[in-house]
Length: 469
Image (cartoon, rainbow, N blue to C red; front, side, top):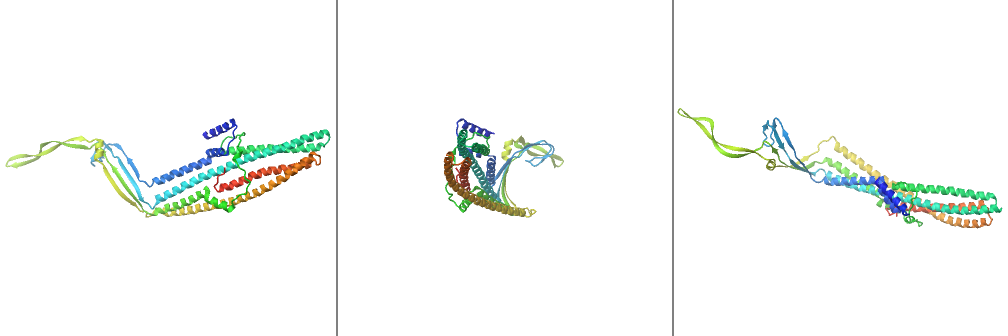
């Protein structure tokens, strides 16, 4: 909605100020609003995030935990490791870390794969933009060619209308038959109908351009005409040269090359499952128990041990010195400090038998690699065929353009002579209209041929990665 409102504001602004949209403005608006281009951009962002995550996977993983709980009934004191039937409060915070030292280079190959995927997504995004730019230029040129055709048709209609007015005077004076006037009026009606069709084609081309820009249809849309330089020179590059440049510069080709490299990295990832995984781990933790007490000595007293010594008939009790202590609860943070413990270890996991999963993954990775290679080859073949066809079309349009230039020159001279002869009564209306129709038709064909040849050359420039405007 924001993009649509922006586009509407742009069109409203230009209509108020009687200005024209440039080709760059149309292209920028189309790229900004096009859904497919936006989705391709999101895929590029996703691939970028996956690439960053693959880099981070090489770093150690560090995690921490903390808990505090209440135990009821018979429990084990986590500090003294003795049984108790009283309510117990305990806490066990810890921090642990681990890093993979070796796992068959899977992490490194996953990083390569993610990097190639990101580069392929970036090329897809560029290709989507390039395709849209080409379509916008074609639609832009179609608006211009329809405007030129309308301008030429209006000139033709004006000439016919002038002859109708002249013939009407002659018929009223009795110098010409009424059938000649009806022939001229029929011709004028045909040209009026043709002008209506051309105006409808112009609006259709404006609609196509607005749809490419993803903005509401604007019937009053006007375009700057100096944005497109019509080409009338012979195209310099051969078909083979265009193909060679396309294979080197086109984003579509580069995207497929990166996908092949990604598939190759995926094969290495699958083979890494045959190797052991060596990991280094470490941890630090502490503990707290509400039963834990500190003992402070207070005094020494003599206590009867319950034993006696006998000296004759006299029994003497035996006393022993006993150290008395004062028990004080130990605070939470003090216990945490005093009970810190550490752990470090090395683990090795060796694959012995995993239901042939590793072998089958390798086979699937090999199949995917071959399939991606075939996709890349097919893209090469299709691109080469498209360029060969485009070059032949360009060459044919150039020859047609040159032939029409000469035809227009000849028909223009014939029309000039026929006009003089018709106005002097040497030829009738049918003969005059035949010459005029030939001249009008060749003029229209020449306008279309010039735009067609220009677009054909821009299409070949597009395949070579050149700037199109």
